[in-house]
Length: 213
Ligand code: PRT
Image (cartoon, rainbow, N blue to C red):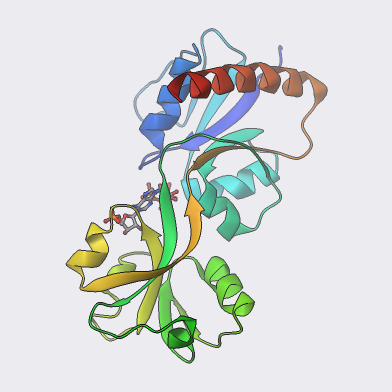
């Protein structure tokens, strides 16, 4: 059986459409049955695994997938051993601190002793440690922006793109802690055969990205 490079792509969500688009722009055609969790490219030695974005770093670290298209913020948060090969220019956002819009903000000291809600505890903890801040981290898995309004926290750390969700919830962004975009990541120990396929894919991707700039 000939070797195929296994790429993980988000099963459904913000990254999926653009991830499939960039493969198509690379001239790679995927047989996409609806609700399939696995698919093959017709004209390139590639197998696609559809997985949750948040699970992808672990699957790549463990070699279940050789490479993946994933949000950089998730790679940083999950702290798995994967290599970022290429930033892809879509799904841009930032991980930021936000507080009630009427609160006075006079620098990072604001966060000292405060209760902060987030779905990104590792990234938030790293930020707090770097700045010698002692705050209480409250982990919630979604709808983080509502936390201050319901008395769950004083501020939040969450992803922001347009800023409209913060605005609608009476919050203001005060510090960016990470900027993120979709990126191509790779397992640290892939075989020579797979590396050759990856080199071909990367060559095509970089040409596509260069043509866009
Ligand atoms: O379920 P799975 O694990 O596959 O996906 P996921 O939970 O990571 O969710 P998904 O599909 O929402 O996001 C996938 C990736 O898209 C994220 O990890 C980011 O890399 C990227 N991305 C880009 C965003 C946003 N922009 C974004 N705005 N992810 C989430 N948001 C949310 C944010 O959490 C907040 O609730 O959108 C809201 C803010 O948006 P604005 O425009 O109002 O500021």
